[in-house]
Image 1 (cartoon, rainbow, N blue to C red):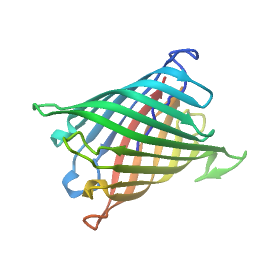
Image 2: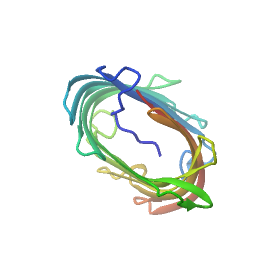
Image 3: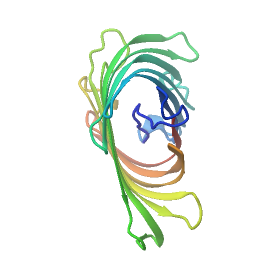
Image 4: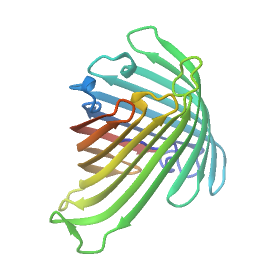
Length: 260
């Protein structure tokens, strides 16, 4: 639901600053459609910072850092953990709509409440695709004025799949969303009905990493400079290709994003 690249617009640091970054988070209930996640409230917050070493019109080569924190109400160790990372990234603005980022990072992982710790390298290729089409004057949907149609798609190809010693897994995650923005009278809030899809595959054949999840829903969005707050609901069908199961359930979510 929330997947944003390490390529934030220039802003609070200043147009000429070499510093850039983003922060965001998501809260989901339940965490996903699987029976073992019933009643589990999940939250994640992250901060990414970068310092540009070299930049052109299309390329940005940076030192990057990551801080990521997750928690859930079920107390699962892997869902109550912290991860920090430090590395290098090369971001390529391939077109007005498409950004590609290549990164190499060393991560440190800890689980809160016990002494379990891991560290190791992570290599990834990310993409982010975004298109915005403004609506014609007078266009409506559900009796509300329509201001735009938005298409976004994102994905990551990463290895290893975890920081466990000897892990050689390759993980591919993809997502996409098609939404429409509807004006709510004079309010700054926007109503966005959407259809979306999440996909994951891995080389090792783990059930949790081999899934196809189409969904439909609506969210309220409150835009701010270089970001937004959002909250909504979604009905999704969670198909797991390894176990051959499909689970259809509604879910609630809220989140935020801020680039700087």
